[in-house]
Length: 168
Image (cartoon, rainbow, N blue to C red):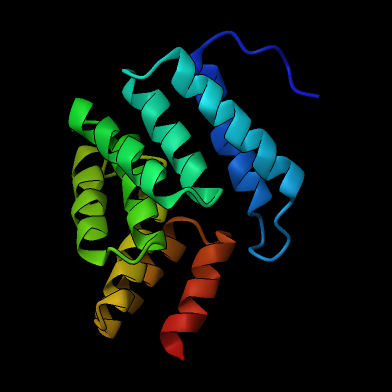
């Protein structure tokens, strides 16, 4: 059972977390977690459609849960409302990589790194840049991005997977 939620931000953060949990290790999607994540994302959006953090987290959650168009739209709207949000740009970069929009992913990942070069999301942004470069066929740059991401967070399992893909 989840705790009582009192705001759109709480629902959006919970939706984002549940969606990420539902996708852990890529193979074992838990339908119950996906459903919960969607419910919290929808409730967050019903409570607050003008808060960039709500839009970003709920959008990412919806995107992870398979609602590509709405997820991207909410993440993009978040960045329109607050272009100086590193987490917002990071979420949008992640969504763009996920849906094979590498040029847009690079734009937002690089902007997020400029906004927060030592931020807690730097390893994830490095991974996003690596995957975007890989999608564009820039394999040397992809490997450099993977190495940067691993340097910043050697235990990030998805970057380890990315490195294996890039080295294939």
